[in-house]
Each structure stands twice: as structure tokens, then as C-alpha cells.
Length: 415
Image (cartoon, rainbow, N blue to C red; front, top):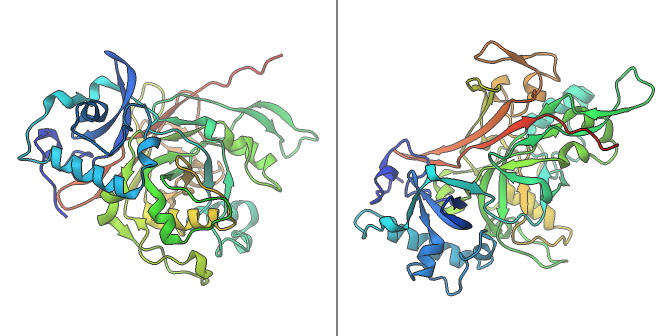
């Protein structure tokens, strides 16, 4: 597929992350309006869906854009999703009547959470990441747990602390134990980290007790965002046995503001890697369900330029989001419209492709040198971490908007 032309001039550049080929969904607010509203990114503008629906340009049979979230639109199902995208392409294509009154400049808005997160589950589905972390903690011979090559491992996170890009992140307090200490202590996290992930947004549902196939799971996915599952590594090391992460992950998860649909990503589908061990039939993919998406991590100390510290690609994952969702529902677990699945940290085989500071610095033993000359083992107060993602087509690209957060000092614990 090549670049689709629009009457919105800024959408016709090979450099824009939001051409007509993309049309990602978000929620925005302006200074002039107190009510946030749903919109679609096109070039450097936003097409106001609330206004378009209110004036009859968009009609899905029921009003869904008079609320500041996409859950109601997701609940209409895949046929409505396809119809909406087709109508937007019709309205915004080159040759259609220009509708400048429905456009708002992205530079003039504040982006908000694009949907209400009902529940959040994070997975551990990148093999390079799992091998690196497992090697650090258990040695290369025991890096992967016995189940890892058979099921995508996950844990239930906190929907209440999923926030949109640009939200400041307060350094968490927690209980840790130094190797030479007899008892643990309580205080601010000293080994704060990121996890470079994709987030799959669930737009369908299954009834409790009803599993779904991998294909059905893929059909339930509404779209994707970038996701940073902030991690307190020192808190995690003390608490994670035997049940896994808890407070070390519960304090914050950031997502990018634009939901990129499966339709926009369709040209970039790619298969998961060859299996080291055959999967059981309920997890076998009927076709390619990963995506070729370039990913990058940058770090910017307070008041200084950002340095790119890692580059990788979503195609490195061992399990797709559809497999993760199918596994999640395989017990009969009910999945809901608005659920969010974190795919797990995306890391590649090379050191420059590692999607966390834990891996990049090998547990803090090999500091990263920034372009400013400063070094980091983990994140310091005032640092801004930014995740970026781009799928590159023929003369166009599909972007997600950045997923950024700045670390603020921990708050004193109440006495």
C-alpha cells in the first residue's frame, strides 16, 4: 500500500505519523471547551468526531461520540469499526469536500486517556527479555521457567494507575531488603526502570466460562498503543517470590494517546518466530498476528536533550497479543470491552535492542552513557522517558504518538 492522499495538506507528507492510512483514535480537550471529546488524528490536525456525529456526518446508528472515551464505540463491534473507518476515509480523502470547521490543531489541545481501562493484564512474552532477566537472576541454564515455551506468562495489574502520555510519575515507596541486611527497610525505590511494550486494547467480550480461539481473540482486539509498565526493580526483587510482581508494578503504567487500529496495521502483519517447542492447539495462530513496528526508547535528564538508548521491533515477541488474549480466556476468564493487555517487554538479541534499563545496564553493572556525557544505571528524579513506535510503509508511516513520563520525587510516607 502507498500513501493515501487527503485534503488535509499536512497528512500528505511521508514524514507525518498520521497520514490518511493511519487515522488513529484519541480523546482531546481544548482551552475553549471544558468537555473532552473523541477525535481522529490526520496530519497535524484532529477531526472532531463529536461535532461530526452531532451534525450528521457520522452515523453509526447510535450516538457514541458524545462521551470522552472510546468504550461505547468499541462496544458496537467489528462491523461498526470497519464502517467508521470507511466513512472517515471517505470524508477525509483528497477530492472530498473540505471540512475545515471540523478540524482542531493538535498543537492547541491536551490529549487525555483514549478509553476507560476496565482491567489491565501484563505479560512476560518477549523471549530475549525473559532470557536476559532470567540469566541475571538464575543463570543461563535456568533462565526460562519450564512453562515459558508453552504458555504466555502474565499477571493481573492495576487499571487504576494506567495514565496517558505526559502524566508525571511519582517515584514509588516500598519495602526492600539489602543483601547484607537482617531485616527489610521502607523508602523510595532506588532502581526505577521502564518496560518497552505494546498495549492491546480489547474491544470485544466473552462470557464467563466461554474460551475463545486465537482468531476470535484477534477479532476482539480494537487497536494498539505504546505502553510503558514502569517497574521498581529493588521492590520487585524482594516481593516477587513466590507470586510475582505486585507493588513494584502497581504504581504506574503509561500509554500513548492514540489508538492505532488493526486496519491501519494490516499491511505490517508478520508471523511469530519459529517455535522451540510445539504449542498446544488452542494457542496455535491461524496466520500472522504480530506486526513490524520499529520501537525506540529515549531518556532526557531534566532540562537537557534526549538520548536514544534502545531501538528494537515488535516482531521480536515470542507470543502475539491474540495468543495472550486466547490464553487469558482459556480458563473461562471473562474479558471485557476496555480491557488492556501489556504484551511484555520488547527486546532484541543485541544489547542496543534491550527494552529495559535492567537489561541495558545488566542489573546496574554496566551504566548507559547518554549523549550529554552523563551516565545512568536506573532512572533519576527529573528524567523523562519516552517510547516511540513507527510502522514504515511505501512513502508513508504509521505512528502512535509518544509515550512519555517524567519522574518526580517520592512523597513522604504519612506518619
